[in-house]
Image 1 (tube, rainbow, N blue to C red):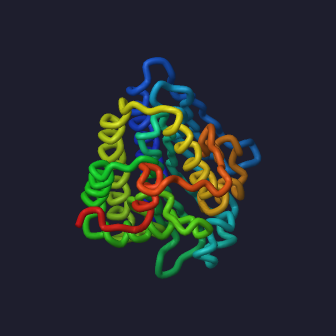
Image 2 (image 1 turned 135 degrees about the vertical axis):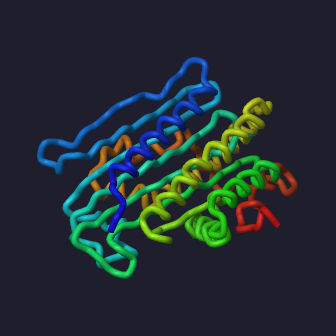
Length: 302
């Protein structure tokens, strides 16, 4: 038996409120836009989208914290590629997805996604429901203190599952055409049914509740670090890598486009500005070249 979708929905909506409030606390003047979008009359009743976006802040150049609850006749291909036996069945899905693109190049970009699917009329050894998600960190000027903190909070949330979920994160957030990780990882899991519905939901809540303790202390430490044109140029260049991953690889982007969600909401994760430089080579020993040393899987808690 699956967990009530509305119970998970309430948690995701409360988490969205909490994250938006924490990010708004950094900004003296700008606030998240707030919308509530219900499905068109021909769609199954009960769905809801709450896109929230903030832009042009003193510390946050752009952030999106999106909540969705959708119902449909069949899952999009991006959701059934690993589980083709679930194709063709009605489903419900609720999710929270977020991205933060800071102003200061010394503050890392970050992402989190948590989702819950219930597929009607399908059953197998995995069950007709599952959770998925995780979070990851993408610094441009990495500080070991920050990365260790991020992974320690991740390990505390995931417990015995941390080594495996860290490995899955490193493998998923990887750009094969660049042969580098998108960032320094975190947690990632798919098709999660560990211990049954309530135990799985408890685990997902531990992950969701860990995001702010993992990220906000890093923002506090780095948001006042002086920076200039050189750092901004490198930030925009590395944002190009982020855009490449989201557009070419990310299953969440593909799912959103295939499911017919509003394009503005699906692509809200993209940075407001990014750059691509032809055959850029940063000088050996420079802070910019040093980034590549951390964009490979590493045990940060050893």
